[in-house]
Structure formats: structure tokens, C-alpha cells
Length: 166
Image (tube, rainbow, N blue to C red; front, top):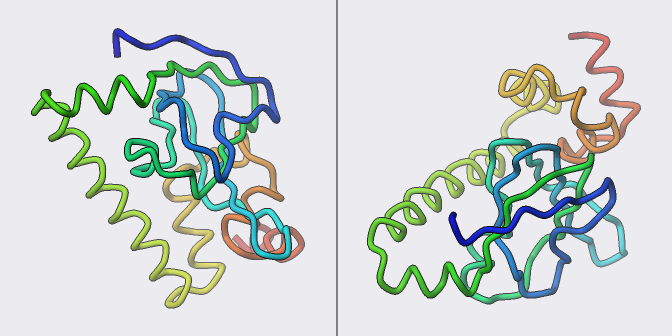
């Protein structure tokens, strides 16, 4: 990522807008981000979270020049190392090692998304909450109750009840 440029995003700043072609893929150095998608009625839904040490992109669409399916918004002040999607696309044409990294990342992301999709049908909100907290016990230090509730597809009131029980 020697071609990268560090950019700062304040809380509420957009790294990427839904419907636009991404200019960058990033690595979150500090801070936290949320991935959101709008439903037909204009309701915003949190569909993913990002934290320090993770890559940020509407993957794999960012690499393909396809309009983003999600918006990515800073949930807290964030410093992100940004690399141009054009630069990455050009390097992918000749860099086999980078292609392998993208292939492995795609498989991992697909597995995570597929597991979350199945969990929406096979697990209770309480089970999904426990799974999420087992992944990151400090989640509520980085994200609001409202954000986590939206990610779990429950109301903030219902999530509060779940937290009291567990």
C-alpha cells in the first residue's frame, strides 16, 4: 500500500456513497465505520461494521467499477489509508500475489456474509447478539446501541432487553 494516502474522516463523514463508483479502497488505521443500505422507503439499515485494523470497501464492487451497494460512514473520527481503486485494478492485471490476496479475501467475506444471511433465518435475535458479542466483547465502546440494533435487525428497545438478560 505504498501508493496510499492517509485521509481523516470526522464522525458522519462518508467514505463511500451508495450508488456511486468507489474511488478508494482503504485500511482503517483508527476509528470505526458503519456500512448502511437504504430500503425502498428510504429507511437506512446498518448492514456492516468496520474498525481499526480492517479494510474498508464495498467489496468486490469497488474493484469492478460497479456502483456501491452500500454507503460507508465514519461512526467515530477515523484515519484511513486510501488507495485508488484504479491503481489496484491496474496492479491486479499483473500482480499474481495481489490477485491471490483478493481471492482469499473474497472467499472469507463471502463466508461471513453467507453465515450472517443463514443466521437471520435460523437464529433468534438473542443468539445473533451473543455471536456478535463473542466476536468483539467491546462492541458497545465503538458503536451505539442504535447501530448495533440495526445490524441485528431488531429495535433498540428490544436490544436493551436482550442486554439485560445477558
